[in-house]
Length: 129
Image (cartoon, rainbow, N blue to C red; front, side, top):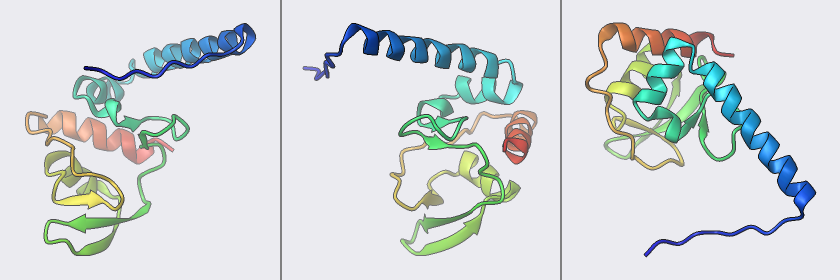
């Protein structure tokens, strides 16, 4: 069986929530015009990651390039890494090699990304501040 959550609210609060949700859909449709964002959407990346840093519980990608992160390696050791081109490539192609501390190793490798598609995504993340 499936569990669901029902939230009861006043009409004015619902209208505000609905308008905001509609605005987010419009913003996402606009973002999908960017080839890298369309690729990330096609590959399911945006199910767990957000393009904008303010989109709830999803892991934000905005401004990620150059940040320092703690990751857990396959052997269980912890390492501090800088998010650079090499890190992003590893994260996409071998996501289980270094798992962001506090996250679960649930990302599937993007094995069928072409080199050009990989470069498109990495280049976008380098500049998406």
